[in-house]
Length: 445
Image (cartoon, rainbow, N blue to C red; front, side):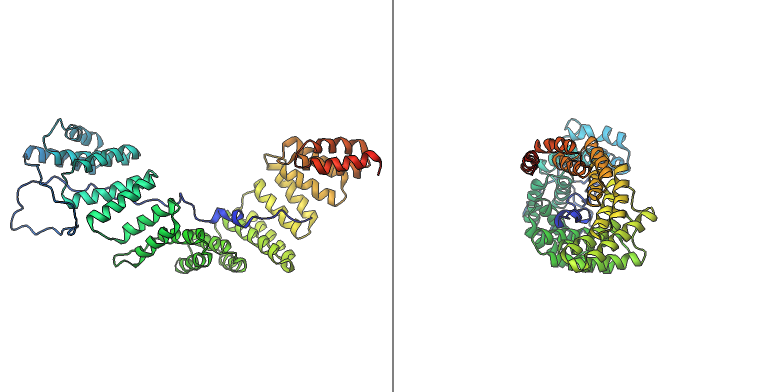
């Protein structure tokens, strides 16, 4: 009897990159305060133009009233200082146009309210108000394009990836601006849209930009995109390189191990994880469980070391249990039982599966106990375990009844065996085999 097979693509997936793991950093400081249409004083230093090559025509400002200037500045200051009620009281009449005749003041007020809504978790409301501010069309270019970029980030936060990509492309085409962060954001969006080659190109561009300050999320996107496009070796190399820079970071360790596993570099994954375990770097359950699983997968690939790998998998899990890091769940005890079965240690396998059955919410571990007991000719014990499994609920009921039938046959209870096999025959999955058995039993052969 061999252990349950492990699907290479799924068994280690808990350590792989998740599409929802990357948070988008959003600049929430309000962009652009109140501005007068009057010329700046000659003795004031000229501000650096952020979008000098923009194709958008610079609009004329209409904020001429000192009263409006004072009101909008007071409202934006209140919003920046977290004084929500005061900010809304001042900004709302300006935003709806009833409190000012200035379109610029109205746009600034809408921006301030959008930030307040975002901070309150109302991302959709923030998007609506920020879009209104942009559509008014009176913002100076520097303010307009900063808000356009923020609008793109808001769309990403709301998982509106296709509109976000369009908005970002408009920002770059009209603003004529290229930054490392913008390409990093583009890679993030492309990845979520499953445009993996485009994500690779965008992140690679981001990392090559003069203003690049590489972020961990960039390498996560790049590694995941490599994996999705069948470039497992590149993903593994990238993740291993990241681990070399951050050897004590648990997330980086997990990502590196997962990349090696997905690239089917099992010995390398084992070596990496064992090195970390020896150094005391194993801090969470996932690391112990992943190492145990990769030992079993590697054993399936190389039968000459299957027994040794199975023993090592069991030892890793037991260490995790003893340290209180690996939780005593049905799933983890089940994995321990599989390790013992793979190593042909049936006595300990029964013990592990029995512990799994005690905490499991279904009968699957009890059925595994029954199978091992049946193999060991422990027919009475197998009958009880199979009965317990069926009463608790199993996914493949026909298989459970076939185990029960074999246990009854071992006990020389032909009537009980036939009764169980008839129930197995009712399951489409086992009907053919069960009916063949019944036919033979009925003829006395």
